Length: 489
Image (cartoon, rainbow, N blue to C red; front, side, top):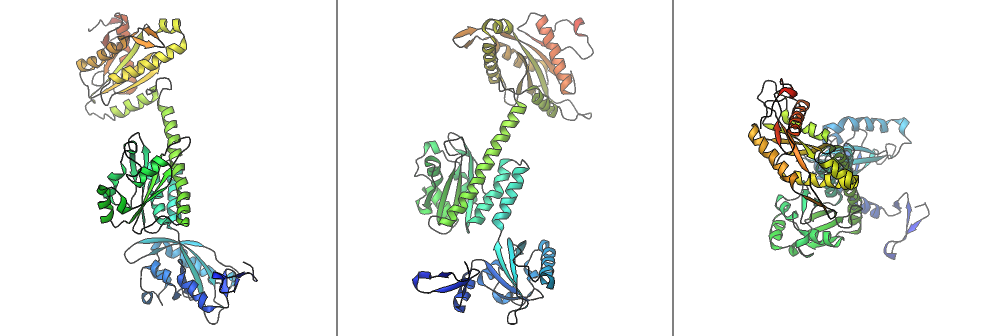
């Protein structure tokens, strides 16, 4: 407001305001300082505390008489001391007389070890004969610190859970006394993941509820998920199994804010905030939460984009199976660094479809592509838990079988794949038949690297094709020429 602006609080008092402060009413000025939720501290030229308001005493975590007369440095973390000393020296110099309110980030350490990030601004009053010193305004910056930590993690490509953890803490800092849980990765029946470092452990399991199977009255977060609108409730209104745990933790109210991530039409995540005071959010609290909720949306969008990129880089776009590069990478990790250690228990199967080309030529490439996708699904359904399959080109597939170190076990898996491929396929109303031949290689006999094992399995496949197709053949030993080795089955 300008120098001549007037404000009439409650219609009773007419005060002139200058630079945001009431003029002509010392008692009101004192009340404004005492009631200010931000810490106000007056220090002398030696940085000793001369005066402070109740918010400052609460920030320092000490009674007023334990603060007055002590150096401000006694209440800062060791990491903040150098910055505080440099800034104080700078604003104390005569040359800086015209400088006002340059904020700096510092950390206050409370007696119990709690560290509170604050943004400190100040005005010089060293030339004031009555109250010489530096007037400091300390505003909590914990929320901003956690937001910065979140953004740093996001830019670094940190996994979603690690990104959301500092964001949950930012929600806590935005609403005093709040304990926040972020529910995300919603499936048809539940939110699969929960992040909330401050939330009471007993309430974690409660987050994994089934929105599809529960009514909107069940919990606030289920209501928010189903309705797409914020939902607020008293802890007393929670289901009995949740109410007891929430009450024992001292909670009185629960807020739930849905997060919708485009292009989704349904709720993708929910921000759940428990508080130890009753009531719905105030307008300012709601606006603060909404701003942070946008960052949850950003994190989930980035995570989805990252997953799409990873999948595009590691999977075959036609069949949705692994691609060659990813199969080779996984095989390399499975083989590990041998260094004289025994060979790992694994086998590689190289499968090629029989009679696929005539089907492709007769029905067209689009039909052939759809058939390959169908074949991939069927082959994958035959695999054991822990096995991997990749389409490595055309109508060729490679399978990595873990936990197999003998030829008989590997051939049983291969024979199962051949049997599956031999079953008719019904596609676009047309029934077609193909088949498969498989070559087998064992890590214990045929190679120590991914390339060696895949090449060995390919040599086994060559033998299967030569011996009439629709069969399994083990690769020849590494020192045996392919053309001079007879069938082993």
